[in-house]
Image (cartoon, rainbow, N blue to C red; front, side, top):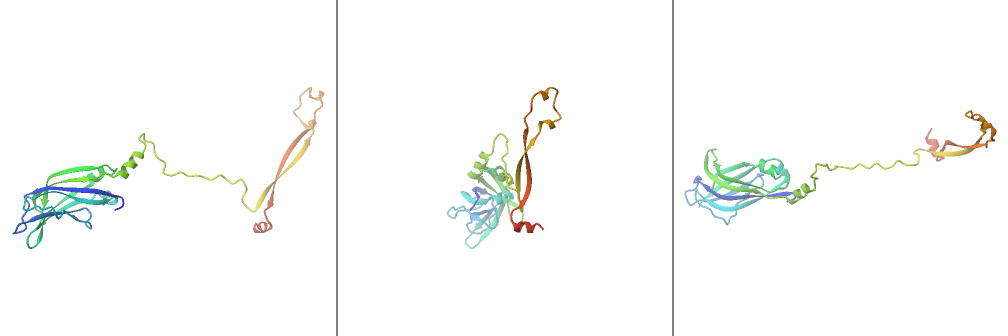
Length: 224
């Protein structure tokens, strides 16, 4: 299953269960978090009577979205006799704390000693001892190791702005015309006393004139 976590339910034993069969009663369990996926205890493990001992494991596969919902772990105990199988009782455990502790990928182990078993009528009869082990997720642990320890944030995205085009956009092209102009030094008004003693050379200046020229005849028509 994609992006799944393994959850092991280790059944140890139960005491004081209700006897639901007149004959010898074999007790087995079914565990689930999502009702559509129920996993029974191994069929090769036999436990009998009102004080059964299993020491077996039921393994569940959980999706990340299931863990985020903080659902319940349900364990149903069934008694199988010679004729029929009847319900003994069930245990329901809130998994919110366990899922929160393992949300970053770490393994979590929790022990439930003598948890009350609830019958169909709502009365409690019997005690169940079991462990819950949420396995670690290497992918989530790897992500945590990539996060900077000094509190620096990782940019979520980088925006790259392309450089502005050097050529103008539109139906016209720019033309640059350069002309040379000779300015007589006598036209300057900032001369000081004594400057007239030396002849001054004409000063050549450069002037740029910008004009617009249509790129094509069709583009010129498009502008009107």
